[in-house]
Image 1 (cartoon, rainbow, N blue to C red):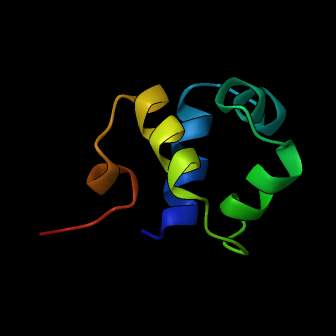
Image 2 (image 1 turned 60 degrees about the horizontal axis):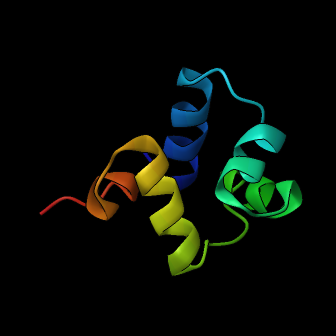
Length: 66
């Protein structure tokens, strides 16, 4: 699973719209949309906000396997 696919899956599991999640983590929804499309990578601060919101480690969020 790609990072973009994982973001989409996590958001849908919570029943949130892109606009709602973007507001919760403090970014614009268009920026968030580019992450789910795999067009751009989020900044470290955005990754931390997403990980905190979902209760995941950064490794879990970005699908990093050891």
